[in-house]
Image 1 (tube, rainbow, N blue to C red):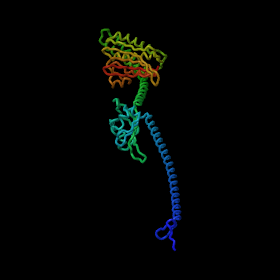
Image 2 (cartoon, rainbow, N blue to C red):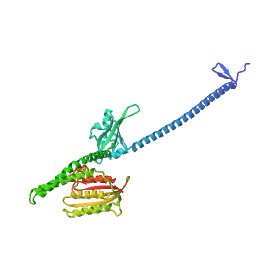
Image 3 (tube, rainbow, N blue to C red):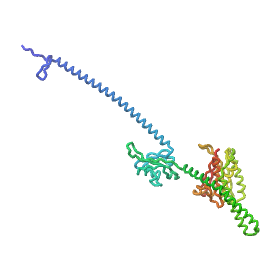
Image 4 (cartoon, one colour):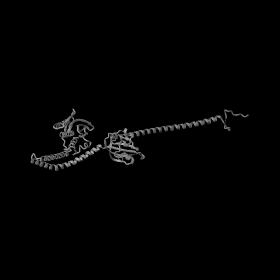
Length: 422
């Protein structure tokens, strides 16, 4: 009798072989364990790779953060340098519009960054001197401009001289990004150049004065002597006496011019001592009022003196001459009469404390072209003037370490201001 295997003991696979059930489960269990182990190893590798990538990501983020912080630091550092420069700096893009404008540029042009950025160069800086004297020339031709000069009309309509240089702005690969213009205000430089020129003129005048004094004074003395002898020999009713007097007056005027020239070119030897400036000005006013009281039209004097003394180191005699000269000029500027105001004030500045003497008149004023020449030797608008009065006054004031300036409006009056260190 043949015994048939039961379902619990035999597994038929593929209809060909019979595998015991326990053995099949054992193989499957082993396969499952092997697969699980492999998955676990793969998971562990993934975990390790994830941890590695996470660390790398943190390092990359940290490097990126450090790089951004360094970029910001360098950018702020460069911006601080640009804003700290005393020269004006602007950068235009390829379209000619301004995209950088530092603080010095604001001060020089009188325009703020808000109203400048994004506008064209022509609108802001102008091209009155032609495009060849601007950053646009460099942008179009690629040629740099070095140590050039031009005039700039500021926002307040005042024209100032500028020194400037230009060059192209390139990227790392040499491509052109725009152009840069660096510029500075030459007003003070021009003033110093004029002062140097004036000093050269004075030196030449000094040499000439010695020759003039020797070559002219002796003949003038002879002419004056012969004129006096001629006048003495003429009868009192002789009409020729008037001609002789004209000769004498002309000689006297020439002699005054020579004396003024010699006095102006001679070095000043100041005898200074501390005095109250109000006292010196009052003494000069007293002399002036005595002379003015005898003449018409009338001139009134107004005094504005401070209660506290303004003490300065001053040569009294020399400073009297300066104040009297300004008072006489003020009187001559008022042919129909008027008022002269003499004011004393003080001012505190970075370079110390200053005493100010303002001599203000209500006269005809001074035109701008004349005002620029007031302190030029021999320049005068008076028929009998020598053109050395204001020049000598300026020399005396500057010898005291001070300054003299003038402010005038035609038909409204003039104010001369003397500033002396206290």
